Amino acid sequence: MKGVGVVFVGLLLSLLFLDCDQLWAGWSDYKESSLSTLVFCENEMNSKDVATCVPIPQNKYLVKVTYTGNFRKIDWKRYKAALTCIDILTENKGLKNMIGSYIYETQVKEGAKSYWLPIQDALVPILKEVKEGEMINLYVIRLGAQGCEWLFFIMAF
Image (cartoon, rainbow, N blue to C red; front, side, top):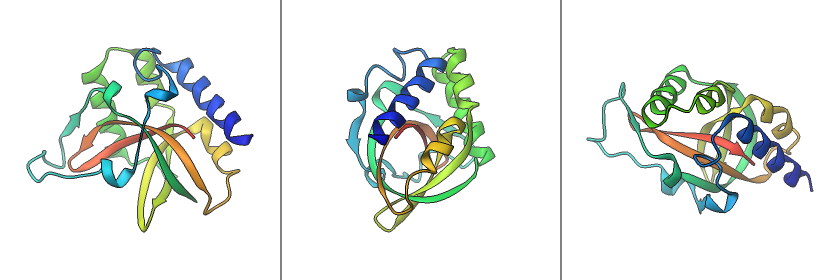
């Protein structure tokens, strides 16, 4: 039952900051996938200092990962690249404000591979209630890439 409340909080936060047509047209729009499938790097994709942006509607995913309980401040380059993508993809000020609510990243694992994903500040205390090592579903968007590192943002879990 706790998961339903968490998803509701994520939905509520998304609705406060976003144009519904852009990021939240329904949870069914999030395609089930895995981070390992979504993460790839082509040598010619771009340099480490350039952000490559992708349209949001095609880049919403539901991934199953293991929660580690680890958090850190968001990486500045990742944050800056996300803002660049938001500027390129939309004039929606709500979306820009929403990205400002991503202060931390949480570490998750998929198999042996570890990923750091930005998470909305308001979701951090709720996620901390999850037991370390527990499998969770994350609703993520992929805004683009910074060099060969994809920019995934947690919308809800």
